[in-house]
Each structure stands twice: as structure tokens, then as C-alpha cells.
Image (tube, rainbow, N blue to C red; front, side):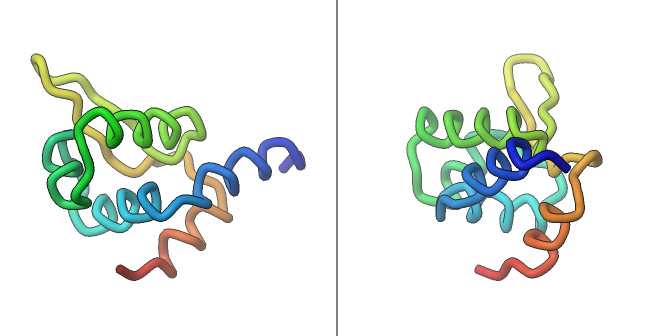
Amino acid sequence: MEIKSLEKILKTLANKRRLAIICYLKKKPEAKVGDIAETINLSLTSTSKHLIQLFNADIVERNQKNLEVWYKLSQKQNNIVNYIISNSRE
């Protein structure tokens, strides 16, 4: 893995809200933005911004269902992300 890719992933994960999103998606395989926002006590706008950052780092995948966007942990995660997710607790 290139240093730049590793830096992007670690910077993305270095946020308690994004880690909370990952913990939530670890328990619930797929969720819509509103459910995630409610669970982590954050506005829809802020939650969406965090999810976009996780998506851009290939940590989560998104799926449009009608007017709702659903997110789940990405199947193409690298070993570092898998390690962090498997060892994360709320």
C-alpha cells in the first residue's frame, strides 16, 4: 500500500463520529443516513458529510433506493481498515 493511500485512510478514520458510524454499520449491515444520524446524535447534513468521506476512502459503499441512500461497510476494505473495524468498540 502506498503511503499516500494509507495517510488518506488513517486521516478519514481519525474522527470519533466516523468511528461511531463504522461501529454502527458493524452491528447493522446496512442503514440509511437518517438512522445513522439518529443513532450517533448528529444532524443529517453532518452525517452525510462524514459518510461521503468514508465513501471516498472506500471504507463504506452506498446504494440509492428510491429517494434514500443506504450505506454499508465496503467489501473492498484493506487489512488496516479490517483490523480497526474488527477491534472497534463503542
